[in-house]
Image 1: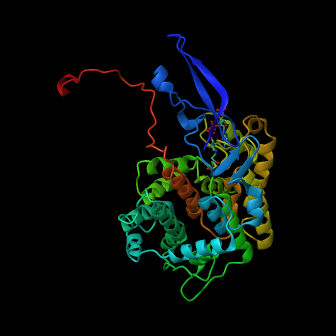
Image 2: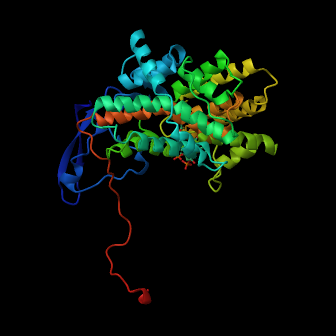
Image 3: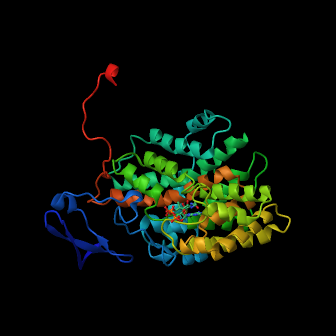
Length: 437
Ligand code: ACO
């Protein structure tokens, strides 16, 4: 819970001369936050902040970002320490329960997840209804939403035990759903989970194995994927998490709220960016044009082209996740060898990064490479098709979305999210008969 600092901010209405003092709330880290809840009641004004540039939509104990310094922590633990020492399972536990687990706690959590990995067999038929060329994200939005139909009576959003069960179900089923989205696109049979494998290794098995040909990914590939999942597990109040909170605030099913969050993540300005990065890098390689041509286009205000994987709403410094993932990207490509077909893409990516980091336009606007810049290259290197990138992001962010949903649902002060607006349309006017218009 936030506390009230002894600071206040005074607002004067110059028309009426009325003054109100607004309290400044203090979190445990980050800037003070002016509590404007009484503003409309006292002065009759709304605040105007499209895109939430200066608005904290809730208080939260889960994830902290200092965008100016490029710091990110989950439950107080710096992302660098978690990436260096932890596993995705452990990070999920940390996010969900607030503390790092003891051995027995982790075992009980992972056993519960294993128990819920299977999808209802009727979901197979649900998948078969998609067009042959359906985008995996479209299938994921639909299939996670469809799970609401299977658990409608069972989920009581007001009961913490029921919320925990829904969270375990969703975390457990996401790798199965993600792999089925992939297999459907390839026309290959769906795989079932292998309960002898850990979460990440099992996901890779469901992606790559075929009947009669079990594929065991190398430890480097499993670790690279596990790290990607850790780095994407949560990122405080971004567009998709805010969507999940807003949807859940009406007491909707968590399956429906997550489906809405997945829809929000899909866009290229959010989770779809790593897909857009690869498309851009491939276009650059194919064009044979000099990188300066693309840098010039990115700066041209009459051209919609932007350097994908650069810039972030919150980080006005190097994205700390990008630093970690950059290293993994290099390690993986070294292991895969010089003849790996992705080497030219990585070379272009490195050149682009160098030029942008030295260019005045990017320096002035604090546009640094973000996590998506490198994750796309890693996925490409381990044989994951571009259309699956955001699906994997959704899989990893599921735990973050659910943790935020559970935090909101257990907050006695939480209410339905209902922003106001600055109306700029017509004032009231009279209806005209169709013949007189
Ligand atoms: N290439 C070129 N110029 C850019 C870029 C870019 N990638 N990003 C921002 N700018 C410029 C804008 O044109 C603007 O310039 P101006 O001040 O001269 O008008 C300035 O930088 C600020 O940009 P905004 O769009 O106002 O910044 P905002 O915080 O709204 O957008 C965003 C952030 C959406 C991430 C943006 O930087 C972008 O589109 N990046 C490319 C897509 C991308 O990589 N998205 C991934 C986000 S991270 C994630 O979701 C995990």
